[in-house]
Image (cartoon, rainbow, N blue to C red; front, side, top):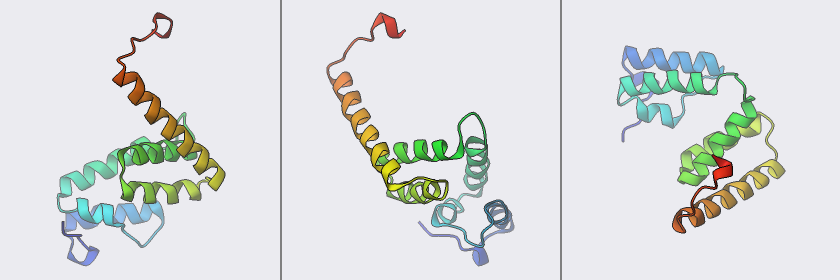
Amino acid sequence: MKLIEYADASPEVRAVYDDIMAKRKTDYINNFWKALANDPATLRRTWESIQQVMAPGELDPLTKELIYLAVSATNGCEYCIASHSAAATNKGMTQAIFGELMAVVGMANETNRLAAGYRVPVDDRFK
């Protein structure tokens, strides 16, 4: 997949890149966005969606990044693990928090697979 650099980007892609850089207060477009720029509609839709999902809400910004990191680890997305580890660290994640998060992720994956494999029926009390 070709990475679309700013200099080579269409006006539509540059507009999204400019918005990313302005809102993130950076002069850098990471490779994720450069890859998505091969399909400008997907680039714009994903950028708009991520802004909505990661915006302030009932969950604080660090919690949102930790959830994103946990899902990324479970899915084995090296890029997302790196990106959201950096974002979580910038929002206050420590090595101790990361270690505890990975312990929870590992345990959840193990017990999820056990429950699914054994086809454990859901207790009425949980419904």
